[in-house]
Image 1 (cartoon, helix red, strand yellow):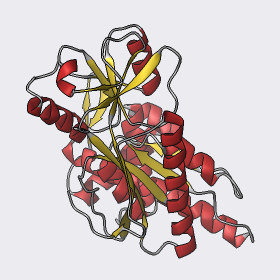
Image 2 (spheres, rainbow, N blue to C red):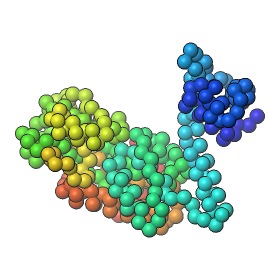
Image 3 (cartoon, rainbow, N blue to C red):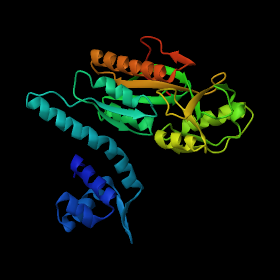
Image 4 (cartoon, one colour):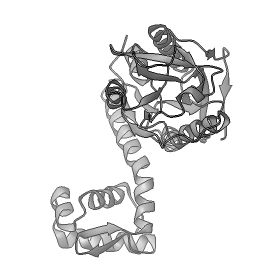
Length: 316
């Protein structure tokens, strides 16, 4: 038996529901038929994809491998089918599929792409490497990703990256905080910190290295969404590391770190075979979103990208 897309969908459904009985109901087939299909899948793959215990079923290491690949392949196949059906009926392909990983500019970027076409879809993820692989596989049309400092984004076959810009990370504090509008990182050594979820482990490592250079070891940073983090700052519980885009709520202000010890780069990726005009429109939209975000925040310590800068095969 050859492994087919429907088999991947079956494995994904069983894994998500954790039960053969529930999965059979969701798939619209009898439980014995589903069990027989899973046995055939196991024989094709050379081992069991699930084990049973008192809580139901859970994937084996082989099953986890299949699920990892299915998470990339199934959305790509769904998008292919939808686009093919639209074209066959004389329509146009679906709206742009945007992915973001650690990029605070994702919302204004999507907003700019709405002009003159159908609204794009946006999917946020914490894993830039996986998102780049999904872009290469056709799951996404464009990826906006943030990377710490001068780190390069992950390579993927058939994917090229363009630098949108590099900006100094700022610290958000309450208006009545004792530090000035520009401060040395060491002045904040006794603070508790929060950073945005999805910035990835590399940013935490960059932060710890910057603190070590400043002569202190910080408390382990909390991690949460932007709104929760800013609420915690308002409660005077923490100070927040933030990308320097957009206005802050009343009661908060941004502190620039002297010497810019922490920086965050925004990158945009497309497939190398994407339409040239589309690529240029995407880059222009990302750079305009960054410019507007910096203007709203009164941004400083920013380094623009060089015009036309393209990275076809970067590696971390």
